[in-house]
Image (cartoon, rainbow, N blue to C red; front, side, top):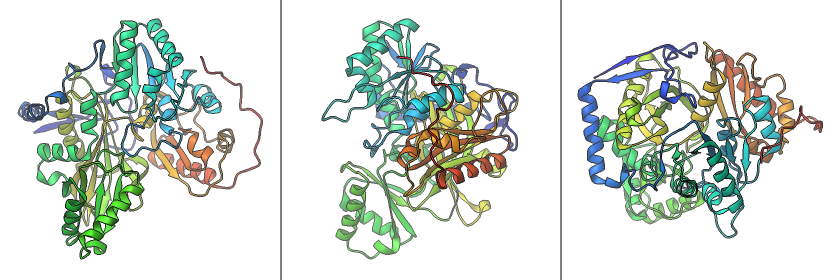
Length: 528
């Protein structure tokens, strides 16, 4: 059993879950609790037992004893080093500028260190520091190492100039917190090197790397959800350890479904999804199915790793809710529910293109956050720390008879949690603005200078110190390469935020005016 309550702190309008209390242990980001789920003692004991059984099966999962001396999960008030690198996630692309470098930089405080893989973008840094009011940062650009595709944290560790600057700033502030996009091996290797060089405690805003890897694995999460919430908590989901077994399973599923899907389980979102119409494979030869799946997986960058996830592509889908959480250390209180959002997905693979605050009926919101709290409680008892979002599907002919299926855990920063934290930081008054996220791919658009895009949005952009309404452009990469746009729109209501976002998309999707080469305001150089 559980009790669900709401408190009052920085609240927005228009939803029954808008009110909440400020999390006292998480003011650095800050974290704002918008709904509290209190589990009774017997349920907590059941969840602790589940966590204990998982640890028995994999003892190294939760231990911090294997971490280097002087390193630990946590978030401190000393200098931060932000690394928005996705390269350690399966099927992440290495040939494009990562927008997460820019997105994560919005979380930096003045004087924090931010790593940029291709060097800081002067126009964007001026916009982020001055126009949005975040203040200048120390930009690091570690050198490339020819013939390798090293993660940014490893490049920082191996580049003598970058590493020396990190060590200097760590000593100056008496410590360092590394804030990675995802806390896999490279962030912890860098933490160990800085701890050894300085003799100071280094925290990483992440769970230990083995647990981080597990929670981001769709197959591992499916097993967890089934154990915690029951057999019906997930869609039909199977592991395949070879193409022959996968083809057999797909053909069997296809005889009672509309579409079937294969997923690379540790890829991000839909990046590793291959979806096929059931009628195309229900009566096909197994070798033909193998060939089709192999071709599809290699087309998205698969490196022949197993197991693969095979399951039904459920329809009709009535909603794709996502529960945004902060999971503190176990001694610092229960997991914190920051919001419930509806993901906007497009295409047959379910590509994420944005999100809005959920407007599901109250009973669905209650069920979603209650089940999310159960899952998050197990993760916390396993030793998880930091950002986490849990994604689900509502499937069925109507909202009243829909089934709730949990499909994915994102144990990392993401396309909703970063804008959510930006909104928390920029709107600390008694009314906290609503916001929507736009992550739009636009085909065949000519590249546009970031400064010109800002001029085109003049009058719609967020301004510090004014009302909270406005657009914040989260990355210049998509605009300047012609790949699309990435931004958030804040307003006092969801309707107003949607309208603002639609207007921004219309402007950036339209014809470009004659470029204006005049500078925007004064230039703020990066601190070096």
